[in-house]
Image (cartoon, rainbow, N blue to C red; front, top):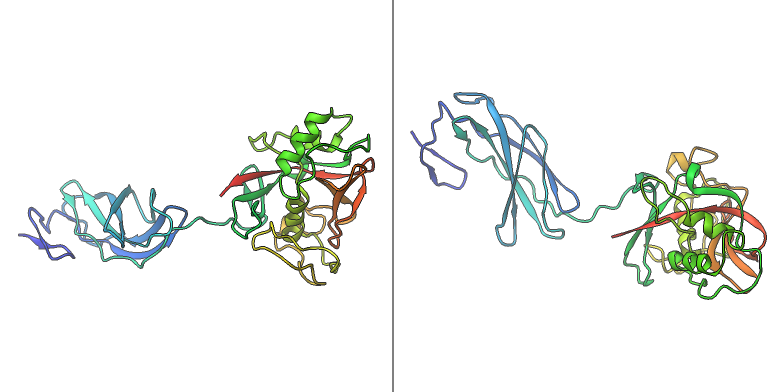
Length: 313
């Protein structure tokens, strides 16, 4: 006896007493270059137990099929193309062969997934996205290092109060840090050398954030409910780009619990943090995490530093 698949073609050799019935399709959910599809096992398993399932994603534009086997629901189908729409089907397999395919799932479009602000990510915690071109298009995810290993409560920008060639970028923290490290040792540039020397979460590419990178950390990870000052806050390197300054209530206190108040990963609301951006021969930019101030200040003063790293989008 033969059985028709959902496409209408006769499936030679299909024996309803031996082959399983088709699974019942559930919901497809998009991920980064992947989808996850849920399903319910068939009530009729055929002549032997079901040994596996095959989930197949069909690209809507050209019918390309990508299949992944799994033991149970859900199954994640990988190696898909971000930006293209897909539907998924699932079939059950026992020792006699496969079932007919299930009905098709809902359509989903895989895309790069943005982590939740404050979530554990790439050796630290996701702090937001930056656009080094300043055009609102993210090219890096910004990662703030763990407080226990990536923050120091008292470091000078430098102790010589003379210009540091190249360390004046508002967005290129890696280059600013490299310029300081190249220009002097840890006695001369304590903050940059500390950040450059951090090894945490299996990564060693930490650095001292540039002014606009540090501002993204403040905007997304503000520890308290204090009103912001409207004198600062514009940041075209933020994603989304911000062309205007803060309001009293924006940014609000972060929704990431571990970064609120004095919790385990919170930035200090009482002391300022150095950025790696030089303001002048004798001053560097800092960020105050209670109300958002971005003052230029004498480099030889001791302030907090918190190392960050970038992950390309």
